[in-house]
Image 1 (cartoon, helix red, strand yellow):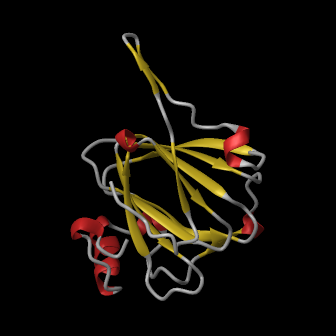
Image 2 (cartoon, helix red, strand yellow):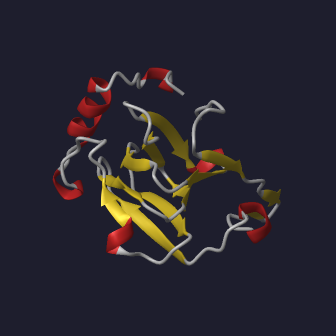
Length: 165
């Protein structure tokens, strides 16, 4: 799991699972904790090596929770040149909050299926989803894992230990 500094515009919200002899319960959404109304929730099923995102929203705030697998997120504040990376897995028990204007993309870096629960403060709107010129990734379906990693390396982001964070 990675650490983030206080200077980043996104936030990691810790979840406290309840564990007993039957298993575990994770409360992902609590209105009192988020302070916003969720208008849409969806599950993303992402194959090994596949990339999603590569956009930002004008007015939508999103939350991401890794249900299964491991995701490497690339996040970029409008005022920064290079994205920062953040690796999250289901075991981290963290909810990633991405505010409007922050470009985001992720890749499934695990060996199996990646499942992410996404929560949104607005229903989907084409007008609110802006492809990110900040990431020079190809279209999601055409972009390979190697292209994503090459982009990250070209931007000067260290993947070993996720040092920029």
